[in-house]
Amino acid sequence: DTEVTQTPKHLVMGMTNKKSLKCEQHMGHRAMYWYKQKAKKPPELMFVYSYEKLSINESVPSRFSPECPNSSLLNLHLHALQPEDSALYLCASSQDQGAPRGFRYGYTFGSGTRLTVV
Amino acid sequence: DAKTTQPNSMESNEEEPVHLPCNHSTISGTDYIHWYRQLPSQGPEYVIHGLTSNVNNRMASLAIAEDRKSSTLILHRATLRDAAVYYCILRPYGGATNKLIFGTGTLLAVQP
Image (tube, rainbow over all chains, first blue to last red; front, side):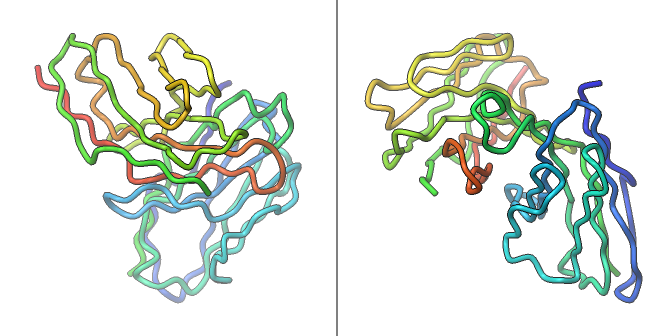
């Protein structure tokens, strides 16, 4: 299995809703990432997990709450979002964030969850 | 993070080679040069990476200037499926700050 699977593919939520995005990989990768991508813009890094621990938070608002329950799963919990949070949310994984062996490999991205906040 | 400069857009004809340039004049000795591409409605896809020597794989070739201040991604025979945004990214080696930061990329259009 060489894929990163994201669910759901599309999500519409109200500003008072709570929802979660899910990401799964079975490649044995120990680093996982959340990116946000607005239309016609490059992906922006949000969070990095390394060995199930949060290692980088790029000053993301607290209404986005990441969780890594195990080495194969990454969740992004959403609460009280704003319409400007509507975007494509991408999950990625890599062998290892920093070790020399892992560095030879690229990131594998999922196809994303298209989120619309109404 | 060291920055890269790429043309906003390029055009190519099908079955012709494509050379996508990237300038990175502030590259440091521990920065690897990575290329990713993003097809419409998909997540980015790893293409190739290198440090100093030219690299080849089944998707593309990466030519790195001797001073490492620029590089070129080479698609040997463009197909319609190669139409995508191509990102050239410098990824510093090692440590907790090792992260993939995307620039604006080059939108490649392939004409039949």
